[in-house]
Image 1 (tube, rainbow, N blue to C red):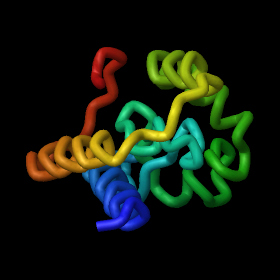
Image 2: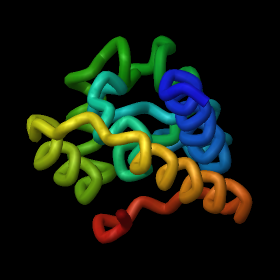
Image 3: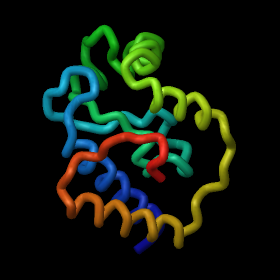
Length: 129
């Protein structure tokens, strides 16, 4: 399996895990996971701490706190409603990291597969790794 295929599989796993949970904004079933630190940052792309489960309306729709359309409003919402995750985001968003090596991607795949197999929603906590 090439790295591109592995990254695509990891993208699917992270989204599947996000969809086990409830939308952080309205508590309806989540339909996607929003990346706080953009996906282009491969270091955090598949880190569950970087994911906020949302339904499409709060991710790309007309919501006043839409993560994609109203990023400043979403940022303020995060600060008020998810302060620990907001603090993590602000602390880590500008750090520069190397792209993970293939071995790290494979380890991440096993960890995400195991988590998904449990079938439980991810619960964000600052000490989760």
